[in-house]
Length: 196
Image 1 (spheres, helix red, strand yellow):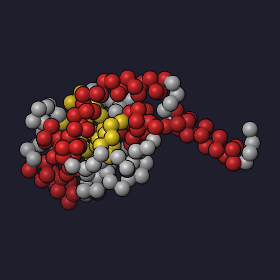
Image 2 (spheres, helix red, strand yellow):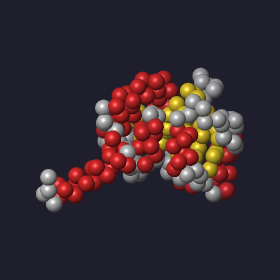
Image 3 (cartoon, one colour):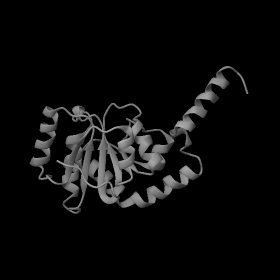
Image 4 (spheres, one colour):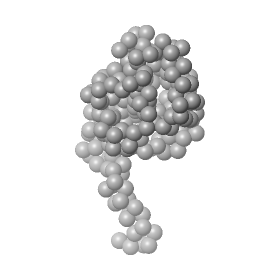
């Protein structure tokens, strides 16, 4: 399964995760949801980025084949953070459905790049302000719910991108950048030391 062009494609999604944990990351449910949505959006595609052993790549490829998704799913393997950031602009959105997740840097990277995302509620970035600006919460991990979230992302992507640009312009996403993190850290230290 090869990769596609990094030029913007409004029918292309991406998932960036440790694919060796594909069950916990919700990949089977995501693939089934993509297969279901392709019934009305046959152009829909998904790139999977992340480390994956040959054994797990074979397991994912089997799921892809069983769902008739060959050609629609690209298993791209691991990439550097810079490579991921360069590619993110080309996708309509990021879909991350991992259960029992902590804050994932890839959500922040997507937000900084202006890319909307789907996240699983009660996991990952749920509860963070920027998730409400940049993302669509998925209430549970089942095919109808994930499919509905994917559909909403595809339909609302232009509007969400406008919201992200506005939030970035207003400084609401500054804490997601290196400079913003540094400033927050310094403020926290000064506050702890009771310094102005």
